[in-house]
Length: 308
Image 1 (cartoon, one colour):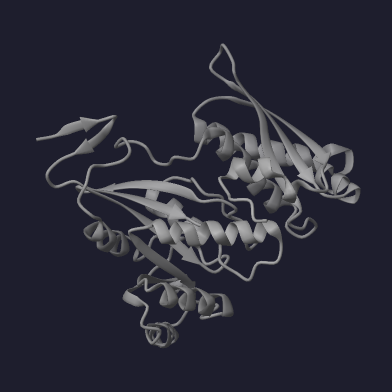
Image 2 (spheres, rainbow, N blue to C red):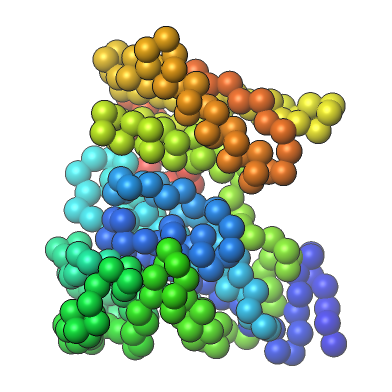
């Protein structure tokens, strides 16, 4: 018998649980999240430490609803924003029913990987190992890396996957679905994420910003969706501010004659229209805010704790 609970589903067989995706920066967590959900939820760039907040992707597999939590990369933090991101990653792991540690098979076990394994051992947690980017590594090297990581005694199972192509991801998902605890689903069957549209819009623009300026612009940027107005014709009017930390960075974002910001806006608008299924009128502004990385409101908008 099926019961409805505030839009969720509960049966005698229903399962529901959280799976935290953790790993070093650029291990492929966001790519995997997008792959398992079947649509783009988390931004993906060539730059490390792109994910700044926890983003969930929701997948229904048989009777199981799996809530994947894409966490920021775990590394040695230096700045306040770094500490907040690493803290968010570990909170995601602490709260999860299962943990998947992604390791970039091309890079192998790094210092960041060792740091993750040490923390898991100290907390008494076990995890599933997912060796990612297997399409770029010879099988003997993969087997050696799997054996090396297995000696940590942290992992219960090992999967070899390509988050980009989907190779091996189905086996990983099947395994995780069987591990989900019994209980009612927490989200409606057709919901893919709990990220708000305002935050997703900001993340889309940040992805285009990183992609266009990956060589010139450091990490001293933030994007805030200041206004979102629904229009009578069904479209959305979105105003966003790109914050930079110094006067010299503003012309980099604007570009000569404003060409760079126009290109960023065009790319972001196209992605937003696809994501939201409606026309979008996007307006971008660049402001200098040297202390944005110490702004409590920015951390609150991302769902991050503010480290003192």
